[in-house]
Length: 210
Picture 1 (cartoon, one colour):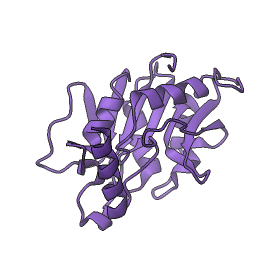
Picture 2: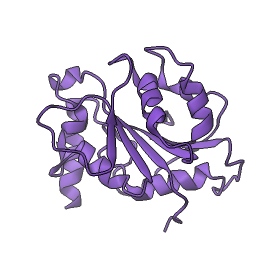
Picture 3: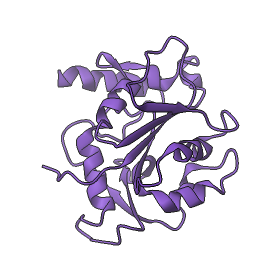
């Protein structure tokens, strides 16, 4: 059991043109009977503040009460600028923020608590929780920059400097990073639906979990 830690804000990025899905927003794809965004909102219910960044379809279901929706400036200017827009809405007293791509159907509250544990310096290596972030790595050891928990202030400072089109990793310059692997037998929380094949795999896993 992962220990419950302090509160955090959550930023969910739903931008992107999703060309591989004929323009359908990846966050609105259905996996296991719910949209990916609905699944992610369920996973982030422990957050003290939640903001969705990007344009949702006109026929999408309303967001839960208390979840804010904002748009990056200029629109479609990339994930770093989207995070900048999300952070502008995050209260100053939220000292940690989960920054999440909007296509993670298997993100769970347990996975977020695990990231918080490592980001807080209570993981196996300790560390300074004022400067430390934690993110998941995939099975090939690649860092999943949009599946992590970070100290808010240094990300906010970095975000103030990013230009349109800047890569997300620039948000985390100067922050100590702990990489976390998912050891559970359940589908990994970092798994994203970038392609139709990914979506098919996610739906298969979701069906197997029922």
